[in-house]
Length: 254
Image 1 (tube, rainbow, N blue to C red):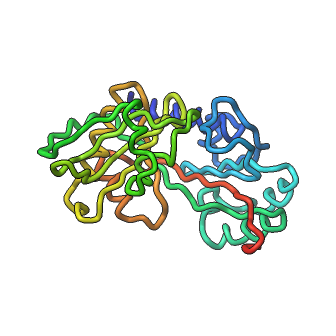
Image 2 (tube, rainbow, N blue to C red; image 1 turned 45 degrees about the vertical axis):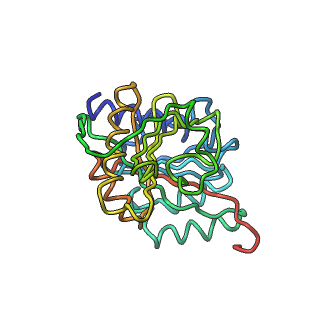
């Protein structure tokens, strides 16, 4: 797939989740919609988010409960959509959400691949795990990012690759089919093997294999996780969008 095809496919996927049109992400003005639970969404929640917000670096699209729409229209007025994610603006949003019993979750910084295969050559001993093989690794504390905590039929772990030092796993990269077309990659490397290129190699290998199987690999990390950013950039990924959502505000945080 060409880069523009990849980006168009992702905008379509996110349009299901934010109840908008794919082209809304390319507009100059911020778009505010009502929450939905679309059958084609990535299955991260079984309830609509009170508020969800996405930017591709131009405007923002906000899906939110109707009760907060009047305040949101005032909040976005005169502000470019991508600046809404800055701390001083998020502070205002956070204060308002707490009136409704919610707070903002961390921002998720998302990467999409360049369209070329990396065709990585490595001396590492690697082992591929198909979906049927992955269950044996659930519950192991060393793989919190590469694998889900357990089998989730709505977004299953479908493929993983490990690097081995003898019989010891140096690191693992895995991907979950968050939608039929979008496979999210996660990576874990044991502390003693970090800084040796293991993460870059495993993520790159998995990225290429996801492409070969007809999926769009994507990668997410947090704002301050610099090692993860470096892995993404070194593995043929490019920053593409930011998304975040509200979560229930526990009593002690109100």
